[in-house]
Image (cartoon, rainbow, N blue to C red; front, side, top):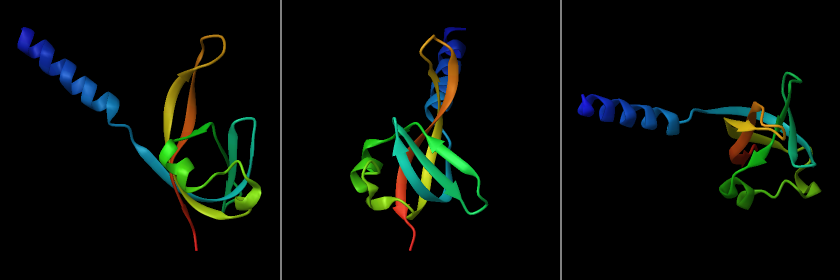
Length: 100
């Protein structure tokens, strides 16, 4: 029984840390109050609540140099807690490449 519980726990841990990423192509429209704003080719708007260090090192989106530039954006969706303890989903940029 202990072996079964341990096996189940390890499998659950693996799937919890193996987070799916998504990729979109979109134009950067700015950074404001910690959010990064993009629009894709179908005029769908996206905002990202954060950016991982590796992507931030490649492109500092807090500067205006990248406004209206097109990017391939790889992101993940994390569950996080808000100001009052409520859970919500936050999109976080994992990787960026400038589209040519």
